[in-house]
Length: 227
Image 1 (cartoon, rainbow, N blue to C red):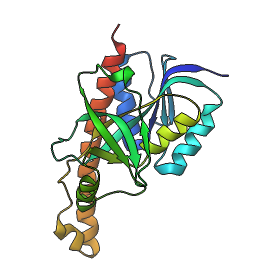
Image 2: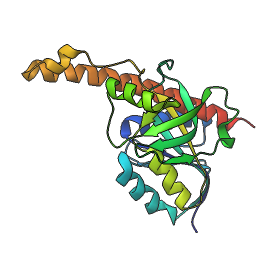
Image 3: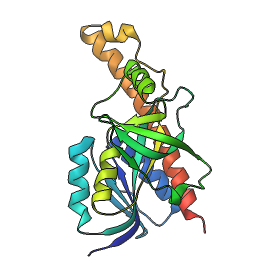
Image 4: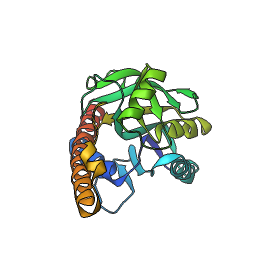
């Protein structure tokens, strides 16, 4: 067995990974951030891993390091799409369960973050195999009234963690609201105008997502730094 970390954070994309780790290191101290690295060790206690998007990437990522280290807890961290109509951008969620689009459910570990004042405890979280627009979110809300938000990785992270007998928790921050959507005139535009408007809304989402992830990283760093 190799190194033993207190918590391993799995973060899907570079867009989420950089702002979370940088804000965490600044708030917690004792760690260095490298722009090129996909694995960051903070003070020998916390490991941040960029795991990729979707089921296959998560499996490959967890199985690649599962035999090399032990962990007290695996955490799925990053952005989420809001499904609950009352959620605002930048809300940190701590779900009790995670389900997939085949109605399979996994119960999550809450003990490590149960007293975190900034985290909103919610009943269920949904993991899909493809992104969902506003209409799809509404449909999911009707079928799963207890679901608050969704992503594409957390169910598979929880299942792989269970396979190696390690508790798993979710800490996701909403990067949008349930009712947000790209305006219809953007989707109907053609040619250069279409590419330009999609680029604009894509950049706007990236700015909001990075801000939300910085909030999550700073909150985690301050919380875990406490005595």
